[in-house]
Image (cartoon, rainbow, N blue to C red):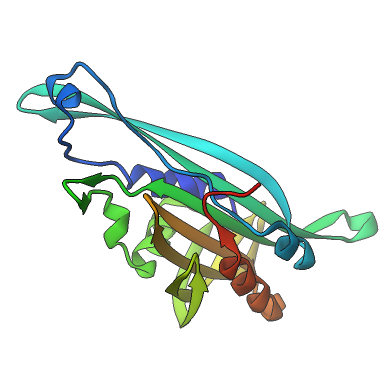
Length: 216
């Protein structure tokens, strides 16, 4: 699954619509927000067979109109991705799973969160991916369970889906959850082939081990 596509979908939904910043209201300044990067514990990832692709910043800029005047908003989100692969020798490597941790600014104005993602359920989050990422289809809820992430009890929803890798279609499971931590929303997404149903516990352990801000 293309994690860059996932963060693009989620980041575009994370823009603030109102603000109390005077410079922003007068059009003299661009209102900017930036999240703190999030990762998962390096030892836990290594023990589960996952290698990180590093952390990337995904900037989203948007022009909004207020009373006939244009105003600029800039939001910086972060995504850390991990992949698990198996060396098949002559046939090359096969990707067995991916795990992504996304952080997006909560954007509080007058003490109230203004980032729409704060109100999104796991079904809403997976629907964004399903609607925007053409390689993922036939998404169905399978189950849910509570786990600890960043000191909070969070509901992790498991979905079945069909993912397209190159010209092949593979049945996969996707796990999605979200918490608010400090001034950001942190989203965790794990994906792996259904033939590896035992991989679920690895994904849950990666979720339990999420760190924010990143200690890397």
